[in-house]
Length: 116
Length: 108
Image (tube, rainbow over all chains, first blue to last red; front, side, top):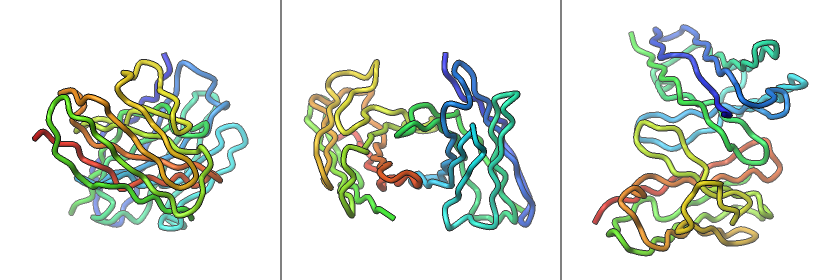
């Protein structure tokens, strides 16, 4: 079945970086974009950016410009999101989602905690 | 960028009630509107896409309607498993994706 499986929970110190992976299965990885969305506890969904998994083209929400990189490895059908210069406000659940029009399949989420 | 205003932010309803949630876009978004359900500790689940197309496996008590800038999610008869938070998403001129602020449906 179609699924996205994300890497496990992470804890980081302020100022560090974190890299989250999202492994796709059950479909042709390069046929769909992967987007990243985050959600702080008790808050709404916040779009972070997108990647065309075929071309590698990508774009980021202005809020994260200069502090985020999205990459992919097509040989293992995996997308990555790396966030730098972490601060306490980055503590959240991070989701990858497959997008064709809207987001139809989501990963299970990766909890990232930023704390000293 | 397009802004999505979702209302109400929360509501209390009883099992069997009819529930309506609205999303208003800051400009016309054609049919680029989807609805999601999210339960605590879980990823969002798509219920409806293209304004009114029901995702496979989603009960028919869920329906979507609207056009232009105003859209509605209706639950015709609220069931115990429907207590959750609901989000709209617009994808006109993607990227970006823009979510509404969410509606938490609680038990009365």
